[in-house]
Image 1: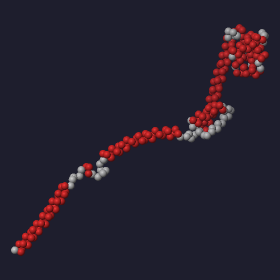
Image 2 (image 1 turned 180 degrees about the vertical axis):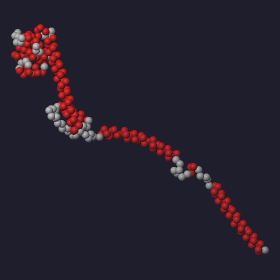
Image 3 (image 1 turned 90 degrees about the horizontal axis):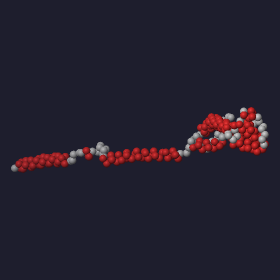
Image 4 (image 1 turned 90 degrees about the vertical axis):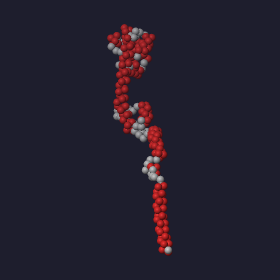
Length: 236
């Protein structure tokens, strides 16, 4: 009887242990079954782009070109405010040998050279080129144009209906008397040297003065016909 009791106790005890083991396994299996499966959203940060993060990065990238563009727009302003570095405080120009500096022309050239930010050497080269090439060319053209003008005046005097033609010799004689009487050697030299002595209105003025004085032919017709009005009036 005691043995049966012990056996029963032992069987009961062994069955309890097995039951407990089974219950623990079931609980563990239940725990595993209750655990939610991993999804894409459960991945660690950085394993997939976050929509909100990506949207923020796109916004930053969209702002970058604008910032760059704005910076580029400010650059010309900085360059505009930048002081010139080439022009000296004062230009010191030297005349080329045989050439005289035109001080009035330099007054106009200096501000331009400073505006172009030319250094001393660059500005001097332009001054030399003006004095040795441009100025002589301009002077030659002016002299040729003036010579052409005075020759045209002489032809006008000869062809003038009032004082030219057949009356030219006597009229030039009258003009010469007036100049000899009232003109000075310096005036005669100036009128002849500049060519102004051929101007029709000046010739007519001296003719009227000479006629008002008296009629006295001082030059022969042959000599007068071979010379211009200025040559007859002022000598040459």
